[in-house]
Length: 218
Image 1 (cartoon, rainbow, N blue to C red):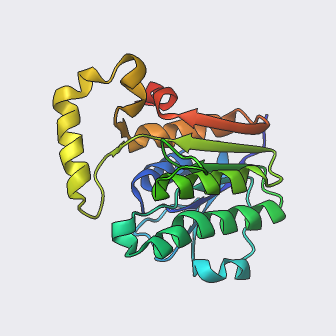
Image 2 (cartoon, rainbow, N blue to C red; image 1 turned 90 degrees about the horizontal axis):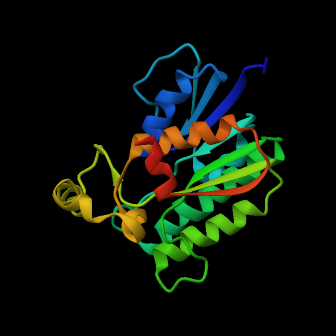
Image 3 (cartoon, rainbow, N blue to C red; image 1 turned 60 degrees about the horizontal axis):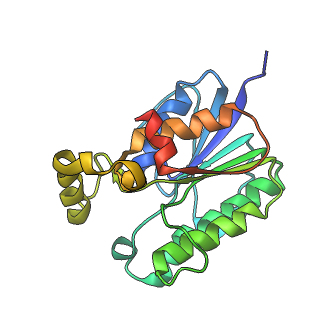
């Protein structure tokens, strides 16, 4: 029997992160879950340890875990600038990966995005792609990269574009089949489920999980 492990999650206040935290706390795989974030979450659980951190000085903390779930992410609009967006979606993610790798974490599971490409002319896609390349180079036993399409679910903040797109999905979602299936909106909970299922495999190497593959957990 495999001994219970320690999970670390960053970004648990977000759409995917919130779903992921719930699954981690209820998973027999883990006997402790460390949540790293800028604020304390209104959650109490005997497994949960919350660390309020300044991501600019993350190195002040000794972050030790077996599996690291990174659900950090923002938008340019919410961040306020391209520079701030880059700071969250690249700098903080890579810093977390480097720090946990140096403390011998085994697996790093990170939410990226459909279309991530380090050579893309689209800023958002390029930043996501550069983040993926940086994380792939680190000495984890396994790196799992999840590339969801439009995330569906109830966010704390209002995003008009996502609300409109989600509503359209309910009416015209049937057209997203065949080659277009990868663009179909995906529930945040399905992404979270895919992350935990991937971690259970305890495999090795770098694995990229497409939005189409994750639809199996919807």
